[in-house]
Image (cartoon, rainbow, N blue to C red; front, side, top):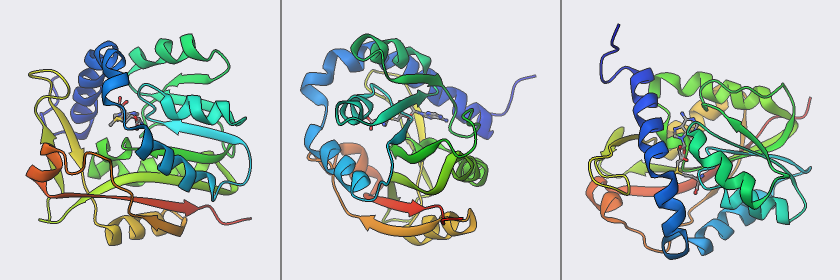
Amino acid sequence: MRLPENDPKSVILRNRLAYGRIAAEWERRQEMDYDHGFHEQCRALFLSHLKGIRVLDAGCGLGLDSLAFAAAGLQVAASDIAEEFLPLIRRKQPRIGLAAMDLTAPCFRAGCFDGIFACASFLHVPHELVEQTLSGFVRMLASGGILFLHHVESSRGLSEYRIDELLIPDNPAVCFCHTEQQLSALLASAGLHVLAVGRLKPSKYPSPCADRNSLVPYQMIACKPVS
Ligand SMILES: C[S@@+](CC[C@H](N)C(=O)[O-])C[C@H]1O[C@@H](n2cnc3c(N)ncnc32)[C@H](O)[C@@H]1O
């Protein structure tokens, strides 16, 4: 049976296909396109709150944040729904644990991470699946563990938007937005306590997509209370 196009599971599948298609091309363009400065700032914000060394890079893409965490001596697992990314990371750093994992159905055991770093990946989670995604994150975090989300809100009130050409023509992906207030409330109802909000912006901000959809990036760091 075919699922309707806007069914959350179809959206996840389409996003997976879109990223799977571009993995090799994205790696080829990495030197030119990757925003090292912005990612460094995001990692620094995450690390300033991290207590412990076990980190999950959730929705890792090319895994450049995973590689930087590993180089800093952290114990890193990298996961992405598009498994095409995983061998690219293994080639560069065989010590990073790898998993093909959907953010909405996490596969790691309870309490096994001190920090989860989700940079621009949670924005692909359909609204209907946000609650279960956040409870999955909470379950994987150790007591006192932290969650980092780099996310977007739309200043014109969009709750979702579409990218028609993700890196290559005719390669659509769907993204979802929350205001800071909405995301704080969702984190609170998942049992997380917001520690900090960042206002870091990519160096080429606004991109044509951000401009079209009036997207404002922000980062949220939340902590699982110490039990
Ligand atoms: C914008 S990229 C960000 C990649 C990386 N975190 C970075 O900042 O460079 C979004 C990533 O999220 C992954 N993704 C999208 N939907 C996902 C899902 N439901 N579960 C896990 N990963 C997902 C994509 O495959 C892609 O690698």
